[in-house]
Picture 1 (cartoon, one colour):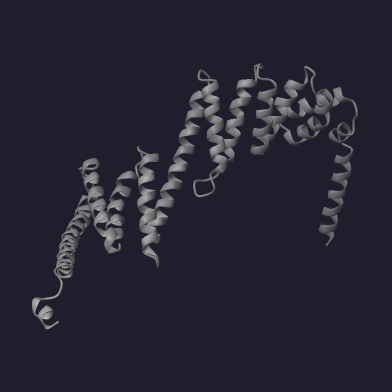
Picture 2: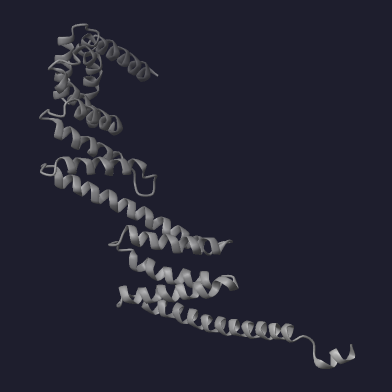
Length: 302
């Protein structure tokens, strides 16, 4: 109990002391030059939260003056240093638009993109902010192709693209798992569309071989579960996907599995064509019967 009372007293004394400290006195000042110097001093000392408070007070006063340029840049960087990346990106973007001829303009443009990049989430979360980061990076490398930060920006771009690729692959895997659920037809179709789109969007992906094999698998399953009118077309699609797989991946570890599905599909296609021919013959016979009318003995009875 005694130690608790001592701790409370120590806290009260500390608060009382700090409330009379130099920062608190400076914060209450109305002298903008004093505030400006204090903000810059705290910035240089790495006390960015205090610098932000003082810049907030002095920036409206010095707006349009020669002192505003450095203060605006430092203000944006304070937010970056304190990991307020979205705010930092906005302030760096405003700086570039306001001072596009400044020696700091290129750095501010890069820092806008870098802030958005650092705020972008892991691949399994919504990638809207990552798309914004990609756009900002592309604008930077287009505007400053000779920048010392160009390679760094390109590395960021590659990293973000890999996140999009990973997210797209995980979505493909989700559809693949769902094909074994209550409504397989819908997810077979979703897999086929998704796998083909993935290959178009990421032609160099390490996942393309696996998805090309799964494309044969799901297209075979889709054809097998199709209605009679759609079956032949979908069986031929599956055979076509298998042929494409062999051409693109002649030494694949999945070749044996692809051949198994292809053989099943070809057998099913033969059975389907035989059934189709049988139906055609039955239809032709029925049509002939209708055309020639009833047998002769029936006519005579009439």
